Length: 158
Image (cartoon, rainbow, N blue to C red; front, side, top):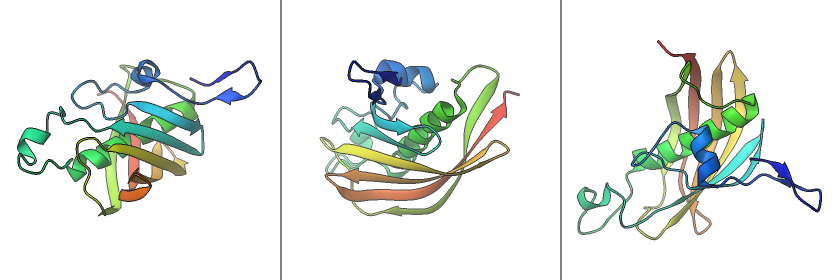
């Protein structure tokens, strides 16, 4: 949560406890460990620490563990959701659902494995009538691992 520090600067970092307030996801599908920076209405940088203990690694693949691309995209979408909620000035509740509704231009450039730190940059492109469009990039050691354009929607709970 952003707050003014003693020096007067704005702290835009979020720890896992604050992230849990902004995402309804929980283990094993919560894929954002920390927010390094967020500017509501503009951009966010999130972090996913990829551990050998992730539940998908025993089956993907036992001889050469690789994080599934669909989960990298999900991590980008979760990071985008935090940006959307921060931009709206609200938190998820049981009256609405934040849906991931589209992926365009997804590209996977580098495998992500145990011990990697996924740094996720998301920029807000548009928000019209509850439809949010973002561009997202996930990097490991400064190299692009994946990128995609994401479309999300906030809708009332059925």
